[in-house]
Amino acid sequence: MRFDDLNLHPKLLANVAAEGYELATPIQAGAIPHVLAGRDVLGCAQTGTGKTAAFALPLIHRLVSDRNPASDPNAKPKNNHADTRARALVLAPTRELATQIADGFKTYAKGSGLRGVTIYGGVNQNPQVNTLRRGVDVVIATPGRLMDLMNQGHVDLSGIRALVLDEADRMLDMGFIHDIRKIVAQVPKERQTLLFSATLPASIMDLAHRLLTDPATVKIEAATPTVDRVQQFVHFVERSGKADLLAGLIESEGMFRTIVFTRTKHGADKLVKQLKQRGVASEAIHGNKSQNARQRALDNFRRDKVPVLVATDVAARGIDVDHVTHVVNFDLTHEPETYVHRIGRTARAGAEGVAISFCGPDEVAWLRDIERLIEQDLKTVGDVPAWTRRPGKGAPRPGQRPSSGRRQRGTPAKPQGGDPKPRKKHRKGKRSANAAQSNPAGNHGGDRANHGPNARPRKRRRKPRNA
Ligand code: AMP
Image (cartoon, rainbow, N blue to C red; front, top):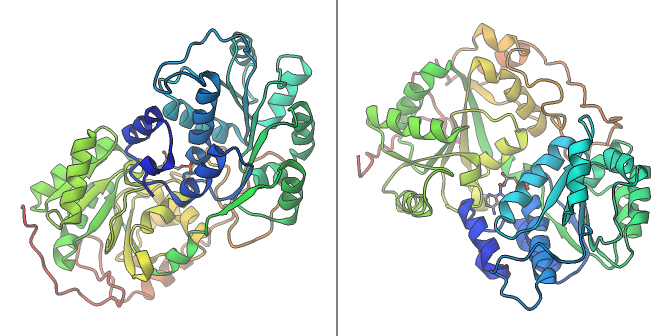
């Protein structure tokens, strides 16, 4: 579904377009109309599905409309309204998620004049208190610090009209239920409540029953079924060898309709140049490109004028291209869910697809996180260098990604006590050796390797038409 069809303010649509979003994700298409209509929503979706925008966009729309009911929605609202109480409260389990949500609000609400504060523990409270004193429209908070500030009399929740609980299952896992109850008791009963959770165990359904009134339920299927239809390979390769390896594979496998993911915008531009030097045509899409340039690149890719699209994660989300045969993770991602999204670009509508990941020495720990999430090992192609057996190297620092090893497929929740989950020990060495054996076609990184669903060499060779 296109954002234009969702009846959001033109200003919001412009902000969304500036982010490069083309299509609403399923959770957005499902939730936004209900939130706009003022209904309570129970949303079942994981991080990475676009759920922040699913609640932020319609809430911002309502906040702006409520404040200036008679005015042009595109006009900049005045900040001198009499009621300075916060009107929306978003609760999130961790500081990271709260910050991420706040970034989303900032992006989507640009130019609206809405003011917000992000409240979380582990830092000096004074800046947060000062911002609260100046008056805010939206409070985004972790429950613990919010309770602290409430107990000190710094927070007035009597004006809250919209309450969001994000990653509610994690908040319960982390033991926030009592804080949540106390906080909700301070919020007016006349309100709209949105509850998002990756899973819907009995404890969440019980909470939903107590907090929500006649909610619309929006469930997004877990991404894993797609993963099962994608042939997934990994090449262990030093960073300096990645461009050659990619160009070699594109040529030898006759790869087209291939999306290559890089971590950064700069990395995407650089790769386009490197591929060009090696005779492979490609175009990049990322946030620094104008809307026109992005559209042109997409059109060229869709029409097979360019066989390779180099993309950053943010730019690639919401882009709808059928029949993508290969996804290449030129850079691995530290977010396993993002890996699932990336490879979900292929294997659409029941088709099979191929995902090839390049893993450098500093990315091994991320690879293991991905394998843990998808509950399978990627097939190794080529050598398994010694550095793969030092999984500590390059591992995200504890606390950098407390949600890694996210529960999947209904595995039971374990209490976390607010701390990041301990990492499981890796099955050192053995796994990689087995994986290498299970892929006898694989030879050395940089050389030709098979990546077809049947692991046969592809005969098809197609010269880029605009090379
Ligand atoms: P979330 O699940 O809210 O954490 O969103 C994950 C990422 O997807 C964020 O980086 C968003 O900027 C991006 N995103 C959200 N909605 C869309 C969309 N409709 N199209 C493209 N990217 C999106």
